[in-house]
Amino acid sequence: MRKINNYTLEQIQKNLLLFNKKLINKNLDYNFWVIADRADFKPLQKIYNSKKKSKMIIHSIQEIRDNILKDKGEYYKDKKFAEIKIFIDQEILEKMNDITEYKNIKNKIILFIHITVYLINSQGDFNLEDKWNLKVNYNVDDFRILNFKFKNIEVLMRLVADSVISTKSLNGISYRNLLLKINKDVDKNI
Figure 1 (cartoon, one colour):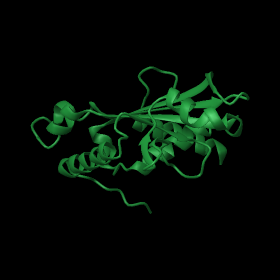
Figure 2: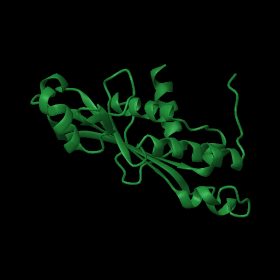
Figure 3: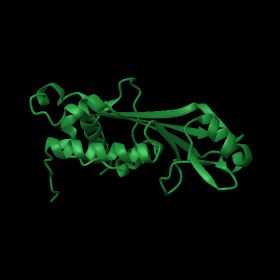
Figure 4: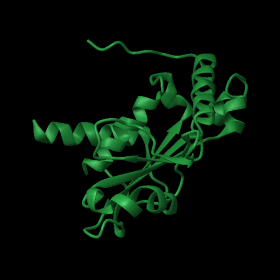
């Protein structure tokens, strides 16, 4: 039997503030890239000072082209790269602990994850036509049962990279509908 948590607003706020702080400290707060085919889930980095071996997180397709694909494009052909964007609504996050505001914010989107997976073509460059997305919206009430961590993003990325689930809508899918869709697909395969 699975334990069902029921986090308080204070616990939710604390968890999301901690998560956001980790993203900012690691320079992952706007977006980052990973190689979806790899077993690990490490953001791609570039070396910007060769003497000190200083590294910086990669944030764009151009940086991947210049720092990874330029010399090793052949190695990465037919591999999948994933761009992950994370947005936390700071205004709602600040109001979360205010019980009088709860009824106004409980169904508002507080966290938004957008994952786009790109396939590298046979020439070792991005195939911008061959991509697929997942956009997941989390509202405040979703976090009553979910203690969101970096691992949750990895799980979502794996689902997208393996073509288990994707979204075509500009608005994306709510976390609850995502769970329903995944459970429905799992039940079909049993």
